[in-house]
Length: 424
Image (cartoon, rainbow, N blue to C red):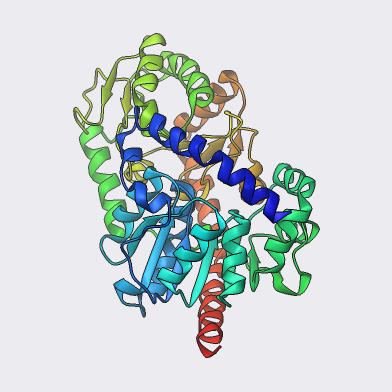
């Protein structure tokens, strides 16, 4: 089955390269580092760890893990691969020059084998869901331990993977360990063909987020500049469907709270212009972050047209909405605003963060919204009742404290496998 997959990947290689070229018309970062897509990397092995975090969300989730490994691992010994420019940029912002960076090459047998021969990693850590059969097979042939950390598998992904179980099951069986986010995720991996003895529930790395004091200070400075009494709603990691609902609701919010400010942070840079257009279509006055971080009283919407600053704005919020949840994306990181003691709003589409969404709702730290009427009701009530906001924020902090521990388990497992691999 893998031979057929490899042939298909080979035939699709020109299509993939054309895709990157076309994406480059909107985001020129796609035109850089083309050699890495074909397995040519500047980092030379042996390296202690190769960590793969596909895009922005996975890089953020991997942050605590990478930092923990860096505490004892010198910079040349850790390579992080991503698949998108946004993920790569975020990794550089988080880790600077302490790690090597590269794109993960296309999953072709010869390219995957050459990639691993160049790196000679003591262990490979794949964050969350990425299953690349040829990379996994190359790691098994080289006797390189491969671990899936913070592993998640939605019900939709399970259905898709089970349709090609003859391809996916051997890849999963080649892993040394799968550290799932929840019992449900663990069971789905087993249903896809993973060895039950190598699958465990280690918890979710996102619960191990730590908020530096400097971030809280930044939030306070922003609020002081905007006006401490000004009600602020931050909508983070949004897609168009999220924005349509939030903007329609915010028009009505302004009728009840005329001084309110909406901070809108689209998920992808290529959507900044479209998001601004939507704001104007809803007849709101808008200022871009690139123009000024300090909107005047006349500005109703601040559009964040930059990356890597979302937590600053969550820290300055009264209420946070997390995108990709009204848009049928599956949800982005719900715990970031919760870690900042903010009441969290999100929509019904939470397949990627289902366990976290359920726990936030059950703890009273979040509310679920779907329509602009739902958003209006929630925002109006929370703007008017600071005690309720504080109660929800404290519930979120307690939930995070209860959920910590995945980081320690993951670091221990990765180091043990790397040591085992080195002994062999």
